Image (cartoon, one colour):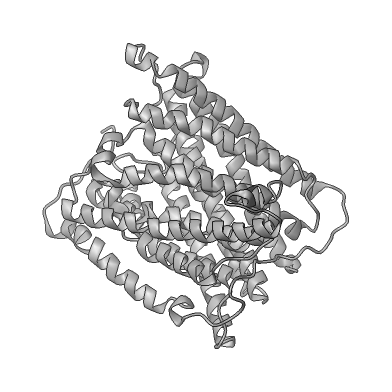
Length: 540
């Protein structure tokens, strides 16, 4: 059982994460209503863009970072069976990150940081926003230090043993985050903060977008890896089986870290500052990331088939019906895979240069992003929340049926909201606009899809609030504390050594360094070799 101080530390992280998530969902509902133009009383471009920026920051940075840190502490202590290393440093990371969020919230909520979550210059926010975002990242770096030190200490104490898969994957995520957050850190520290404070008059937007692209796509894998940890280590056991292959899981996590980093230029396909050769290199790398996703799909589905057949399922697909569909982890995994398949197809379109040009900056992109992040990733965060809450609070969930209803409603809401977005993108509707009520024949054809999006937004908001209610009610109920263990799936074959390359990161860090220099070296260096021109802030 996890010791009480670590449980409290993790709970604090999860409440910040899920509180931000609930608020962001309410803001999301406002956005689909405002954007449709069907409720004139709430239309306001200023409020809309402040809301979009706050929604994006809460979802993409606050929910994810705090969830990943809290989950990491639980995984480290429970899988290594050792006390948390340096709790004071872990609390310092929490405090710095939380202070950063509070600092960034001031300009966000007052409309002084309406720069969307990508904060591309020449859009300019209050310096408090950039300082807050910096502190959030610095706090997460302390978490990375704790994870890497615990991994290293355990390996030193167990030289002939294999690092448990959940801790191996968590350390991989910490390494990935250190690599990927360096890009946005360089942008904020050396470009945006000096520019916002007036220390420099202009900013090179090409360099800023290049540095942000360093972070922009790998951050998706930072969010996704905890969801994959749940798929590999919780779901097979919850289904009544075991992990099909331990080695395939390790290979998938390593490929996510190595292939997932140097690929951000597919976000810059339409930008002029990078050459077509480097865009091609990043595009090829983007397709390589499909490999760990396919490995994960194969391994986890094979594990679930083992469980289904043990439960009496037979025939080609009979094992699917034999799975425990009322178990939140299993249900969330199935629904996540369905959304991952659809979202993955959209990702292939986005990564392909010609098709990317067709859907660039349209509502298609919003649909794809929400299906992968809010669909696949967040639904597994919810399932992890349901699994881990009794192990942190010592109390069982307040209901066995409400989590199942909540997960189904999240899935249905996501389908209702993102399907119209994909269609509207193909019809040419742009994203990042505050209103679509142009009153032309073309835009009138968008109205049925706008209505479907509103229904989807209503279902999702209700589902998010139900999720927060279940967790709160479970924790607050007057029940005696019980001991719940965090249990991980066994695997085939049983315990045995793995290849050293699948049990450490030294070689892979060298490989990452080489790929980063190859893919980002000259694209960044060119801004210092060639004569480029900065831009003045928006509105001047």
